[in-house]
Figure 1 (tube, rainbow, N blue to C red):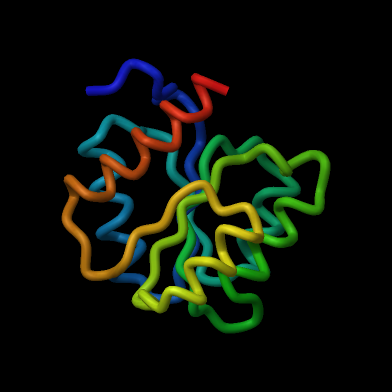
Figure 2: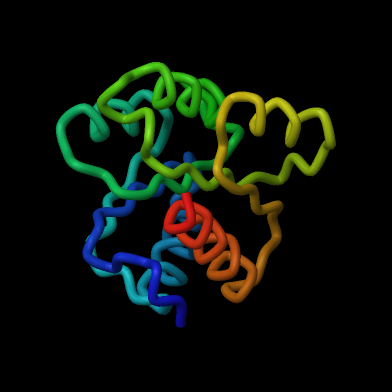
Length: 133
């Protein structure tokens, strides 16, 4: 287990598919996170980000009302949330989508379907990079 991860942070999981939120939540708990909140779309996620101190956002790309990419752009524009690490989870493996997310400031990217190990590796990579920064 990577020691650069602060497991006391609150993690926000944004996905319009309840089953996927449950899968991500279970993996996060396996890794060691306890404080996990959920949003069914980007609009709800943005509200949570305004009202609570979030230490990591795990968001789906395709959601109604506000996509994960739009959510990411809002997070990066707001000085209060600009530094919050964002992991994009998506079925979109297209290179141009990955590049678009990277340009928008995503910290890491997971393509569905994924394993618990892959999700854990991506999260560890984010926190290693942040610790080194």
